[in-house]
Image (cartoon, rainbow, N blue to C red; front, side, top):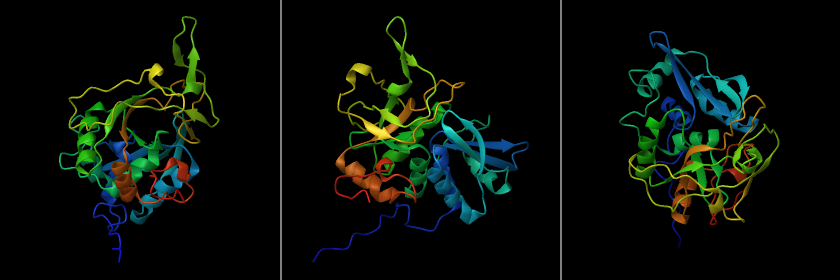
Length: 277
């Protein structure tokens, strides 16, 4: 008789939701800002579609926290809270003396936080793996987040994602540079260095040369990016962590659970042993 699979102690549904789970929004490019003397704080994060926005709001709703739409930028629509006293503790933990974003020394990543990280910016890499974006404005957070993912059983490869093909415009000397804005779904190519654990921040980022991209490596990503004409940067580019390999992907799927309502299953962690449904 086969045993019944047990829920991991670190999976997203293993315990009741708590306010600290919102730290998952800060693992990627999300921002937390302390106001004045630091007694109140606000979280802001960019989301690429309405389903992901709904998932963020749903995660915050049990604590009476609402996310209102802000400006529309190259990475999608900003969601932000009001300045609130109940976010001051999270802000104090996730900022240093200069109020720059920093990972708490005792930070323990788990499924609930990882799920929100995946919601706000995660996407498949087109090769059976999954990419979690890092904050390009806070490189000091990259090493601690690598260590946190490794402790969770997800040793990642740190990569630098190139601009997607749609955003590359050939120059007169043959180089590719980010081009004019687009607002339609398109295909993006991702690849990465060999899947070796990165134990600390001493290992430099690995760039992804264009000639290393395999011809058959592509994924149709409907929501990863929206570039406006006045913001020519491609949000598909930048630092990220890549989770890959059968065991790691099984672990990732176990931790984050099924996709939130409305989020395309094709853009959520998945492995060959489990249906996308």
